[in-house]
Image 1 (tube, rainbow, N blue to C red):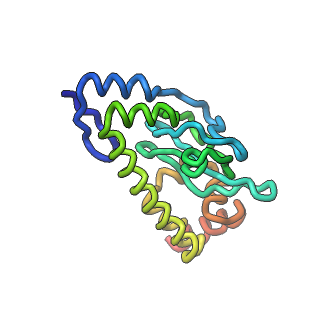
Image 2 (image 1 turned 120 degrees about the horizontal axis):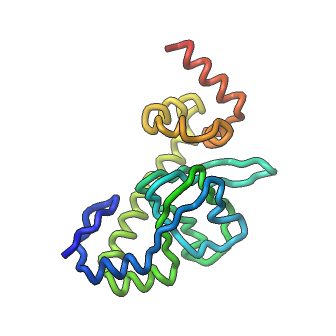
Image 3 (image 1 turned 30 degrees about the horizontal axis):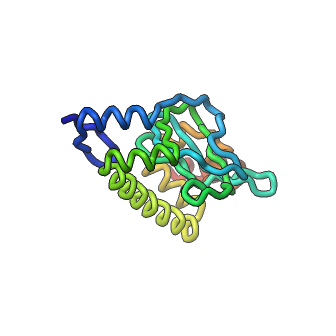
Amino acid sequence: MVTRSSSLFEIPLTDQEAQIIDELIPIKTFKKGTILLKEGQVARESYFNLKGLVRLFYLIDGEERTIHFFEEGQPIASLSSYLNKTPANHYLECVEDSTLTILSYDNEQELIKKVPVFESVCRVSIEQEFGKNQQMLADYMIKSPEKRYLELQENQPELLNRVPQYILASYLGVKPESLSRIRKRLATKA
């Protein structure tokens, strides 16, 4: 019996199950700036971030609006497009060189048949991400950009160094100049 580590929990697998997973979920490295999914494309793959940073953004009137970052240990998917086979209305882009597992829909279905515990892993992963996304949406709706910046600084400080300012500003819902003013104001308070 082999135990494969997942970000959710330890999964006991037989050698045969581990081999099936290795065959059906390849690992690939993508260069910074690689677009994994474009608006209008149907998502045919989901990913798991082993190393690097990926963002989900919308292009609205020519302006990028980042709504989520996927860090190491997180699943990456355009769920509605992937599950319903409909065109995505957003983009997935590698912000850094990123090493990701790649899972096609067909391979996922085969994996669920051959390694039944995999379905539970997928369900738990989706539930956790759904909860995080609900909280993120609530925070965006009720908190000021300055408060969101302070929480980002407290909860994910590494993002402040990993993400270019214009992307960070779009994530906080402000222009880069406004982010500069927020940073200056907070620095003078310190």
